[in-house]
Image (cartoon, rainbow, N blue to C red; front, side, top):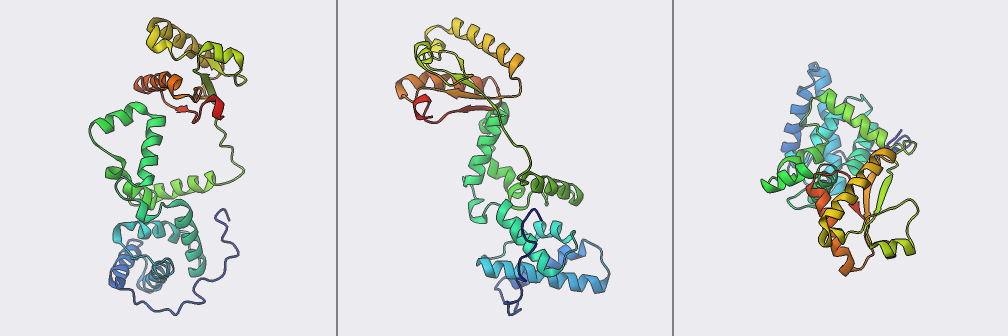
Length: 275
């Protein structure tokens, strides 16, 4: 229901049923290995193997993709098989899930966009860990490829992977509250802040970081105490003017917070005048 496939037509209606992909033997072997892991009796095993091979074959043909054993398709389908759906419904659920939740295989390469984004997320939530991994030249592609292409199904036990699958589906529920609240730090000069600012923002003059470090450190302690008391769960959001000459100080301040290991730090693109 959450995947929106309730009234989808039978995807096999217009397929001629031929298993003639160049890599068909690889698909058949992978599907047989998958079904064997379920421990079904011989009759059920043959029927399920045929269904699974049909689904992978039709998917590869319709999407014009060559099957690769490390693409994660088999592992994703393994989770879907547990739903015990008719073949047509199983394909529709599989197709919808792969399309919505799995990054395109061509993007899951070294320096690909999913890994760049993942590194930014690590930096945002745990800058100390991100710095540690970067310093040891351990990059997301080195450890996260299988996480992305099959949503941990090849890493976790099946029941754990299914629980994670439930969370993915629930997070896609439009009725779930995913609101993020920000503690806006207006890091422009004080005079600019006084002439106009966002309601509820907190001012700290970022130029103090260079011109008067002791005063800056005192201001930061006061700001952190204020945030901890009134907005402890808000994410940090720094705001500059949008002018390069002034915002170089803002960038220094943001870098300072990241080096201190402060999580959930962001910077408004374009600054106050580009808001």
